[in-house]
Image (cartoon, rainbow, N blue to C red; front, side, top):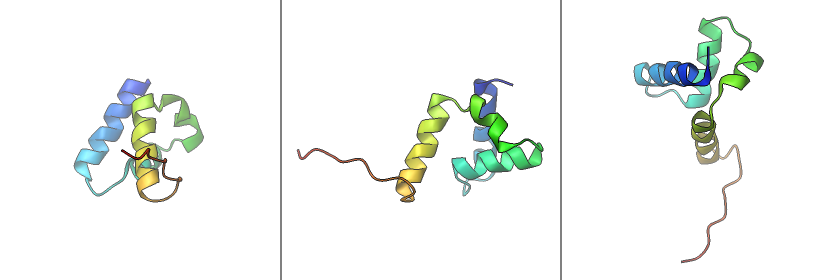
Length: 70
């Protein structure tokens, strides 16, 4: 397993279940493969991390980043 294959698996889950968030897809992947969530952290690529962070911000799990006035 590597980060590219892991991302591909998560994206596949998202295509099959479009209402599922990336965060939920990672948890779901771990559940169906009986893997501890802590062990997949090394497979989370920068791209996947950014997608999870964006969803977390949209759900107000993380503070919104400030924007400069235009």
